[in-house]
Image 1 (cartoon, rainbow, N blue to C red):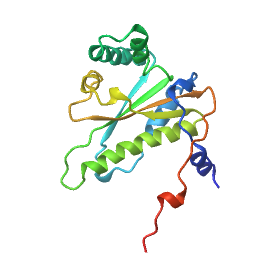
Image 2 (cartoon, rainbow, N blue to C red; image 1 turned 30 degrees about the vertical axis):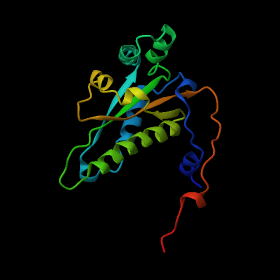
Image 3 (spheres, one colour; image 1 turned 90 degrees about the vertical axis):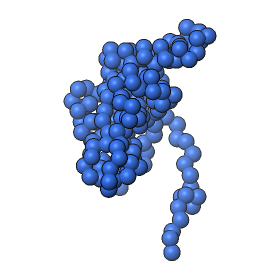
Length: 188
């Protein structure tokens, strides 16, 4: 097996609460974004874009999430509001992958959406290859149009995911994986 196969075989998501500093450097972030953009892209449409949340940007985005949460949950206590405010500050780096699929005469939007998902997975894999750990999440705010508008997504754009990246503070336990006999058929 190659080291790439080993990486893919052993990779596990590490929740953002278990990701700490140090996070990726500016050069690492450039590498991550270059790798994330090297995905299948039928028609070269570039049906995705990236939003980097690092430093104070994580806190500013968290303020948006907390404000919208509080609007919908006026009875929420301070502890819960603080937890919502921290959503994008749990890991040193969060990269939002925005799907910007559009109508095209030859390329279905489904292929474009899958390309954004592939960009998310490339980010996760690249983070692990650089020695970090990552977790690809959406959570409620990825679907809330008020939050998305405040993060400057257009009405036609959707959030494919938030990829949280940092140094793992503990190892992630292996989870049960389906037996191949349960998920594979051979067409004959």
